[in-house]
Length: 367
Image (cartoon, helix red, strand yellow):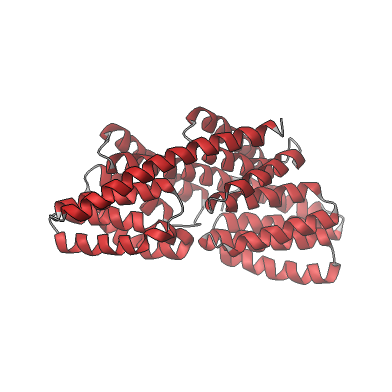
C-alpha cells in the first residue's frame, strides 16, 4: 500500500526517543491502516497497543487506543458504537491535557453525528475542533473540513461546500493521507448521485449530468484501487453507480448491482438507506416489465421507511414508490406516496435552511 502518511509515521516511529510518543505514533499508523480498510492489520496493531497502554498507564496513549478502536468500527460498518469510543478518546485527551488529541477526537465525533443527522451535536463538535486544532493539525482539520463540506452540500450551498472540500483536500494532501482524499471523492460523488436520483424520482431528469456523474463515480473507484483503499466496498456500486444507472435507464445493470451489493451495504452500515435502494430496484423491475418483482421490492421498501434518517431520502423513496404503484395500476396507493413525497421534499427544504443557519452560527463562533 503506497501511502506517504504511513511512510512518514514509520520514519517517526524509528526515530522517536520517548516510549509513549513511539506508541502513540504506532496508534496513529494503526488508524491509517483502518482508514484504508486494512482492518485485520489495524486490529493486530491495536492488540499490541492495548498491552502497552495498560503497561504505560498514559491517558494520552489510552486516548489513541480508543480512537483507533472507533476508527476500526467506523470503517468496518459505520457502526454507531464507534461514537462512544471517540467520546471516550476525547475524555482521556482532556484528562491528559492534550488539546490536539481532543480536537481530533471531536472531529471524528462530528463525523459520526453527521452520519446520524444529529446536527446540534455536530455543530458543537466542529466548533471544538476548529477552536483547538492548530493550523497545521492536518488530520483534525481535514476531517472537520469534510464534514463541513458535506453539510453545506446537503444544505444546498454548493459554493461554500466547494470551499470546504478544497480545505479538506489541502490538509489531507499535506498529511499524505490518501484515505482521506478517497473519502472526500466518495462523499462528493455520493451526494451528487443522491441529488440526481432525487430529481429523477420527481421527473426532473438531466441525463447529461447523470452521465458525467457516472464517469466521476468510476474515477472514484479507480482512485480507491490505485490508493489501495478497500474500506466500505459497497458504497461505490450501490450509492454511486447503481443509483445513476437507474436515472440513465440502464435498469438491468442497476438491478445486477443492487442484487450483488445490497446485503453487503446493509452489513456496512447502510441499512437505514435500504428502503431508497429497494424503491429504485422496484422501479427498475417495473420499467423492465417485471411487475411482480417490482411490487415485492416496493412492499419491502414501505416496511423500512421508518428507518430512514433524512427527509430527502423519504422524498425520493415515496416518489419512486408512487411511480411503481402507478405503473402497477394501484392509483390510490400511488397518490398516497406522491403526497408524502411532496411533504417530505418540503420538509427537506426546511431542514436545508436550518442547516445553513446552524453552519453560519458555528463558523461565526470560531472565526
